[in-house]
Image 1 (tube, rainbow, N blue to C red):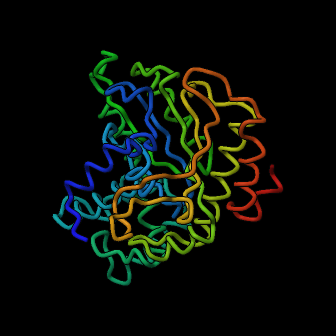
Image 2: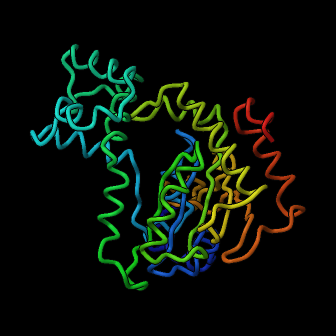
Amino acid sequence: MSWSIKDFILEVINEEQLNEKLMVYNNRKPYGQVVFLAGGAGSGKGFASNHFLDKEMFKVRDVDKMKKQLQILNRIGKIDIDGILKKYGKNIPAKEIENIRSIQSQGFQLRNLQLKQPNHVRALHQLVKAMGIKDSSLEKLLVGKDNPETLPNIMFDITAKDVSDITKVIPMLKKAGYQSKNVHLTWILTNFVTAMDNNKQRERMVPEDILLKTHEGAANTVWGLITKAMPKGVNGRVDVILNNPKHTVKYKDADGNEVEGIAKGFLSLPVKKEGGGILPEKVWKEKLFNWVKNNAPDSITKYM
C-alpha cells in the first residue's frame, strides 16, 4: 500500500497523540525556563530529548559538544594540550596529568584522541573540566539578560552523579533572574545493562567505572532529592522517564513498519508539578522504587 508523508502527517494531526505525549514545560513559554535533564552515561538523554521533550524550545548545554569543539579548535591550531596544562594544570589531579602525558607521548593530541579508548576519554574530560568551560560559557550566555522576557530557555544535560551538578548552577540562574518555579528536573532512568550496551555503540565510550558511578550517582541524587528535599531554587515540575526500548512506542505506517524519529508514546512518572509540592507518595513512590530497583545498578538499592 502506498503511503505518502502527507498521509502520515494528517493521521498524526487527526489522532492528536503526538503533542499529547510530548513533555512540555510551563505551557511552552519561550523564555525563562530551565530543565536539568539528569541521567547516567549511556542513558539516552539525547534520544529522550529528541523524541519525548520539547527540546526545540531550549538552548541545550551538553558537555560532550564542548569536548568536540575543543578538538576542532586544536585542528585549526587555536589550542593544544601543552597550553591547557600550562594554564590550568593546577586544577587537574597528578594521576590524571600522568595519564594525559602518557597519551601525548604516544603522539596523540586533542584532535586525534581515540574516543573508544577509556583513558583518552578520561583525559579529554579532565582537560575540559579544568578549563571551567561549562561555567564560563553559561556566564557568557546570561550576560546582559536582565529582562525576564529575554532569559533564554536552557536545558542542562547532566549525569547528576552529584547534587552539585544542580546546586552549583542555581546561584547564576537566580542572579540572572530565573524564578524557582520555572526550574525543572527530568530524570532519564535507563536499565543499566542497556546503558552499558549503549555506551559500547557511542562515538565516545565512557570508562566502565565512570559509567557505573554516573548511574549510581544519578539514582542516589534524584531519589534523595525527591524523597527528602529539592534544592532551593528548583521548584518546577519533576518527572521520571523510563527510557528502555520496550517502553517506547513508535508510529507505524500502513504496512506496519516503524517510522523512525517520531515517538507515539513513552513511559513517564510525574512526581511534582510546577510551583507545587511533591505529589502524594501513594501516587508515585512504590512505582518509582520498583523502577529504580529493576533498572539502576544493583548496588543502589542499599541506599534507598
